[in-house]
Image 1 (cartoon, each protein chain N blue to C red):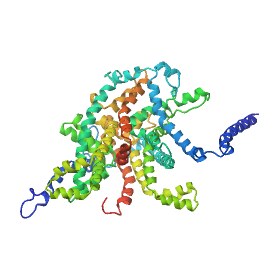
Image 2 (cartoon, rainbow over the protein chains, first blue to last red):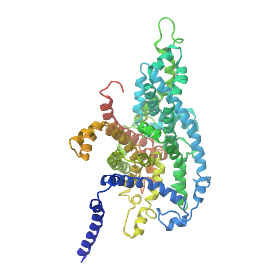
Image 3 (tube, chains in turn cyan, green):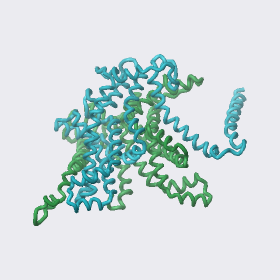
Image 4 (cartoon, rainbow over the protein chains, first blue to last red):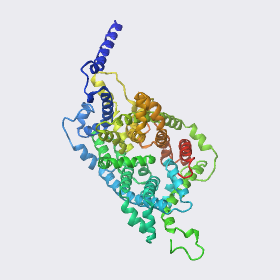
Length: 314
Length: 300
């Protein structure tokens, strides 16, 4: 008996599948846009796109529901009653430890970390790249090679010596210290980016400026800088997303009241005390992801260029 | 520089002085932080450093303790499973998506934007979203059960046997877009004539991909492989956010071991030894590649 019913089920399943498969070739000759090949291509891409979009959708939907609705319904269903309370709570009153002023504190800290780190790291790296490209001296390439190889060393290997050095300098746990750390670890990829870009500029320009008597800094500010706006934008995109998303340096090199947003987010969501408020958690997660997502959607192609270069950073 | 070179015999140190001054931050970073820091950590991994680093050498004691610690063994196993599967899947999925995108399709930009956006998000955000989706009480498991499959079980984050696969799903979601982009760039670099020649010879498309295009894309594959692999060794935030290493110690990874021993357990020696092992792992991946890539040419 069991066998027969199983057989029936299989047959039914087979029918359903063969229906789907057979419907294409059996009809009239399909139009070009609906050829089997196109259906496979677009179908696969569509399924993949759904998989990639699903988490974003779930985040948005969950953050707009009330807790009773979350407990009853399923995570994929759209909210019946839209509420923005979780967003308000995540921003202004979610608790981490003793602080109950929400993610706004972490957001402020992240901005305070982000701005000087991006500016300093890009200035240092662009000048280094310029010196390496146009003012070479013996040994410079050796240091550069060490720097590039260093980009592959896991941060964990270098983190403790840096803690000691920063402590000796009296800037461990301060904003200055963290800016120094971001400048150091942003250096390999950014210097490479700028060096390659400056090398690709026509050398005649540089030579002409030299003949006219321009010096190191004059050529940098008057000629190189105005010509390299696109690469600066790529570098900014790279650094803004990289530094905003950083977690490890934030944990190691800051104190609880200056934690960046990622660290605070993790503390809010993974705190063991109290009732879990999933809607607040998802609103907080979205808020933290909003900055890099905004950069991504605005910058488009430049972002792709940045990450192709920045993939080394890992 | 004109002014800095004294008349008569030019001093070599002062030639090109501005450039040397400008490169001081880079040279310091390379020598002091990257080289110095690494050597320092390796040296101190042979000492009995506890709360503070001390130069009392104990030979390989720290390493013996490390490899005797169940938590480290689990960390290494997890890294191996996560690493191998994540390499295979991200290369295969990334290449298939790139090949599909390369068929002169419409909405290419839209699809690329969708596949790549997770890469803009941090591992913390990625981990927390997937922690929610894989939540057995409310997530995928409960949804499938509510449709009628009441025995359906899918709770990777609460099952120590399969927890690392739950992390893998999240990791792949975040990272395959990048692989797709690199592969697509590689495919676009292939000469159009190759395709024409293959078509003239009547070679089916899948065979052209498998036996002509992929071998031609070897450099792209190798570079991608090295990039993903050296990123995998560093995996840390994702695990912290998604599972905090749990249930128990089932999803611990080496990078988390290092952090916990250095900054929480106040057992620096263990942290140094573990981070040295991470360094060796990366070296095993990177050195052969660097040798192949830059060994032949004199200048990189």
